[in-house]
Length: 102
Image (cartoon, rainbow, N blue to C red; front, side, top):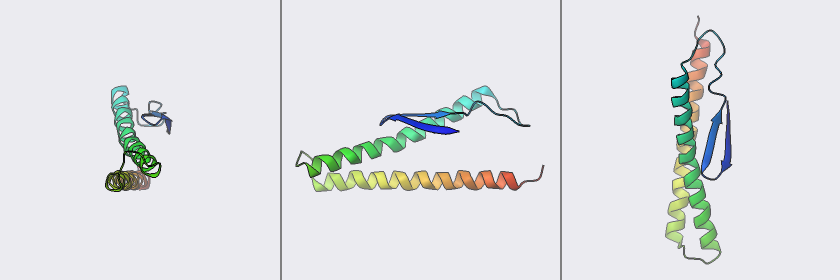
């Protein structure tokens, strides 16, 4: 599975529809899972772009103020921590499945 980010607002997940192995997956469920991952990826990209824009505006003396800049940066930090928590939970679930005896 590969996740590619083509632009600040477009995130794509590739390789989910090619399930090989003893368990056959449903094409519709693959598509739904892919859409869920794409939505989660875009939810991470938006706060990053907003924080970058706020920092640039503040440092260049634009319209932004310190309070708004710090709020945007903290939103990005929170979304990154959430993403890492979800990644760790998915990894733990994968490891648990791999430990199961068939």
